[in-house]
Image (cartoon, rainbow, N blue to C red):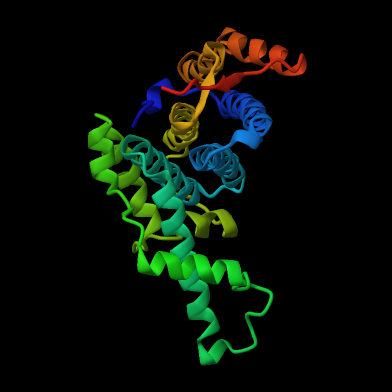
Length: 277
């Protein structure tokens, strides 16, 4: 694990951390929107990865409240998957190919549904219609297929020199993604309230909260680095502050975030367009 169970903060402190990250996320996304007129595909993907990671982390906290710790780990693995994808996209500069590949896969999935006799007339309005523009784009991609391939999680982690992200994050969380013989054991006792209730290690499970916030900060940093914008140093300091808070629990770690908030309220830019090389 990234933060060991004996060095964990309270759930209330982690909730403050995720609230801080959510506030920062909103400011980052609106800064992307400020530059939308000159936006390129890498910016669209980077901003969407930031937005998605924020929703996933907040989803993990909602699941914690149920409590559904297994599902927390499932979403944690999803977070890591996006970190590995984003790192690979940025390193190989394949954002355009990824967008084309995604369109082609989604188009074909929709066509499979439309062509299924068992679903005839049942998917109308549920999937995007094949407009002439979409059809033309698809046929162009069939003739010249995008070269992008999904990266393997283990390879991406190794390339980042962070193999523990795979071993103790992605691989560990996979046990909750795929069916296991003890699936639902904890849920059984939570729903029925029967006693004696086995010890499912709730205290140790808090590590998923800390580590999920940590991964989200890494996604944010990777996304800012991948974008075509040049971000102010204080923005990176704010991301680092959230990360540092996970270890210290000290409110002072959010000073940089407060500075970013002040700039945002004064409508001062947090980033500028990079000068051409």
